[in-house]
Amino acid sequence: MCLSDVERPVPLHKPTFEGNEWDYVKECIDTEWVSSVGSYVDRFEEDLAEYTGARRAVVAVNGTAALQVCLRLVGVEHGDEVLVPALTFVATANAASYLGAIPHFVDSEERTLGLDPEKLGAYLDDTAEVRDGTCVNTQTGRPIRAVVPIHAYGHPVDLDPLQEVCDEYQLALVEDAAESLGSLYKGEHTGTRGRCASLSFNGNKTITTGGGGAILTDDEELADAAKHLTTVAKKDHEWEYVHDRVGYNYRMPNLNAALGCAQLEQLPDFLERKRALAERYRQAFAEVDGVSFVEEPDSAWSNYWLNVLLLDRADLERRDAVLKVTNDAGFGTRPTWQLLSSLPMYEDCPRMDLSTAEQLEARLINIPSTPSLVDT
Ligand SMILES: *Cc1c(COP(=O)(O)O)cnc(C)c1O
Image (cartoon, rainbow, N blue to C red; front, side, top):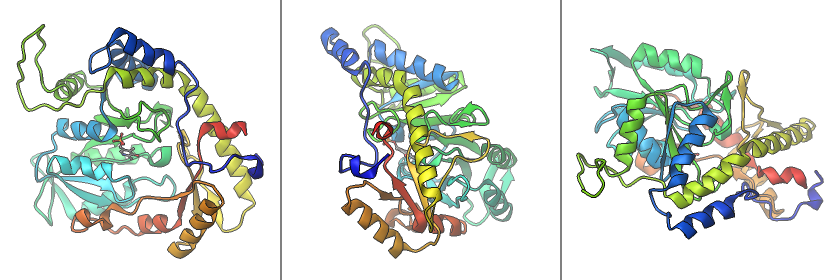
């Protein structure tokens, strides 16, 4: 890869449409099946379940809606706390907030960029106890119902020790797998370990449906409930409108699912090219002082959704200088998310010591990661 040959600006990540997208979308229009019922919606769910190894997949309008439904179905209620990393996209915390729950922020570890299970376990030993099968925050008196790890930038979080913490404290494990389609933890697809998980097919993700998401689960009952809740809780009937609770209009339209089917067919190819790109970055940055390229954690296989550089020093000014120089030169580099614990709507939420996440915020830079970059 010779930088001077690359067409600028180089975006951080853009969609790649090289397969059957036009044919499948055209078929929706020709047959008039464009909305929330149609053969591609069902097929996309089957294809996703088969690809990930989850027993069931239920599609939704976006990843945030999928996560909201996951949290609701594992029992998160108004006034509950939900443990989420401080270092994540805002949607992870918003999904809990939509249910009236309170995000409770957890630190990350440098190795995986995801939630730190060991630190979480030690923290809960000091601040929580299980009463009648429910984890209670002894400081706030509120139930802590669930933990939502993310697989940051596609790198799998360490799920084994996290699962142990969840078992000990009776917490539902819900994976926000929005960024990790194609990533494996100990040979299993991310999003298949917890009670359920959410995926995202937003335009910047590894595959896209324009906007879209899905719920993965091995629990048939939970999957049926998810389908019901995302389709306005309408009871099956040929013509009658009978709804048995306040459901959501969250079903992915057939048009979007058509794109999804075409994209999923190309996923193995995208993953191969993304790994080749990551390998080139790894080699290129091995020689550069002051910065390191983040490789997949041990016992994981990463989709390298967005490639990550870590500056050796936590210095926001230096980070911003690097971002400015690279963006001015036409390379779409980006900082990580501002820690959610410092956003105005979440600044009063409970949190543990967040020192590693704070360091990562000042060190992390994403670099262009579109699969087709390897062809240049
Ligand atoms: C993209 C993303 C989401 C939200 O997905 P949408 O489809 O945009 O609603 C949630 N969590 C994380 C970590 C994400 O990266």
